[in-house]
Image (cartoon, rainbow, N blue to C red; front, side, top):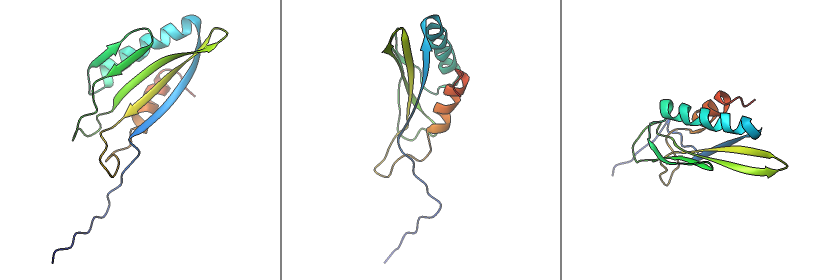
Length: 114
């Protein structure tokens, strides 16, 4: 009888998110900066880009560190808004083999999140 012992394997949540508050022209600048950052740093190409959503392709199976990003621009009233950053990794029944949080955090900090 064969027995398998898995050690050292860690699985993470398949999704991570963060958001940044902004107003008026600042939102437009952050939105543009996010597109540039994603074009330079995402493993996946853009699938959707408009004034309210930026979405990359993915996540694809067996792509290590392949975070699929979705950014949405949400109105919060009184001229205020938020840019919500979500990162997804390919998930098995056990979760993800890597944590998407550092990748989401990198974009968050690039955009001036604190």
